[in-house]
Image 1 (cartoon, one colour):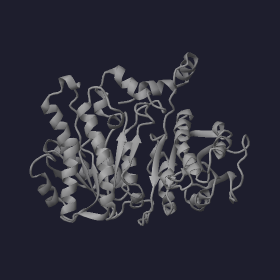
Image 2 (cartoon, one colour):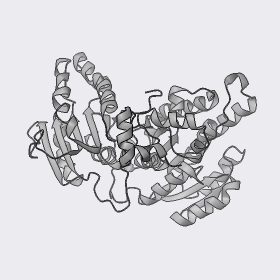
Image 3 (cartoon, one colour):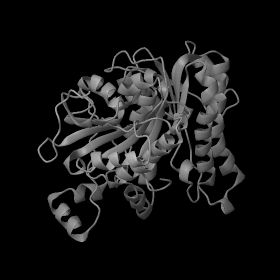
Image 4 (cartoon, one colour):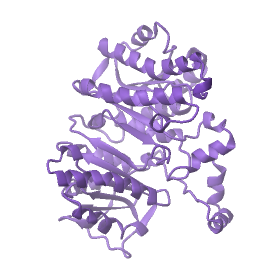
Length: 450
């Protein structure tokens, strides 16, 4: 469903009217388009501590236009406030900040840049995991980066985003993959997020097809977010097995034909679901995306046992049962990637969704609990938590609730299925074994649970 307010607010007449009335004017977001070659189309500015030198070494693969600002011994020409070009991307290494006084460098670096950001610019701050920093003063300073980065994300305008990446010792060689994602339009609807990168031996061999040679399973793939995930994984080179319930056979077959995938119909809650799944994956699997999910909304006072049990069975129990079956049968390959579709509701809760929110919070717990054991096989497991995404389900919401869902975020609009799919595709890449047991919100920095 189209966002009519977004379109009107950015028309010639609408822009004048909403500005005069003091109404929000969310910016149209720039998203990844087929045929694009570089993650960044415009100027990248680098600054800060020693990690930024590693970023400078890979920067030619990100963009042709590179500048330095308050950086240590960088080769890129200096960017001058008021004279330099508008900035499409910014990377600041704050990993060297070792006490509270040094945090002033955040203000000194970012304040001159803020009025020079291009529309839909992307900002990434680098730090070290506070729990891995020995000196207490330095650990405090690194933890302070979370409050700063989330606040910065809320102050940015014109579709710009900001993220914080904590880079563990030994994880520096995984920066390229993370920056290719977070500095590009693939992360258009992600802002104010904090992720930790750990050491990972796997690397992407071909950035034009990072999933080449991988076999991916997507549940709930017939339409909506699931279909977009399947299309995006196929775009990135994966062979995709699309799974959904038998009534979705027609849509599933059409999608499989379109992307060159394979359709598999079964009820993931059936008693023989594991057996049938294993039979359908004789060659094993490299990527598993547990997207299938349902809602049965009622306030807790009116919640029936059937509503509660159905949501728990589909959303939470089935992913665990099927994953365990794949693991026990040896059909989950070493260095596989598992992505769970959680929800912002599972982080913040939502009235009338006690069952749904519990199931989605459980998926985040699933990722956290299983990460250590799976990590021994090089397997990562993470959750993606979408916020308000424009789908058939949200189109059926009452208008007031739909508008509130769109506007109550830093980006002031709903996301698209593609936004969720891009996050899933990134977490499915070989190098993102550096991220495990974590969740990534795709919500435009929604105020709910922020």
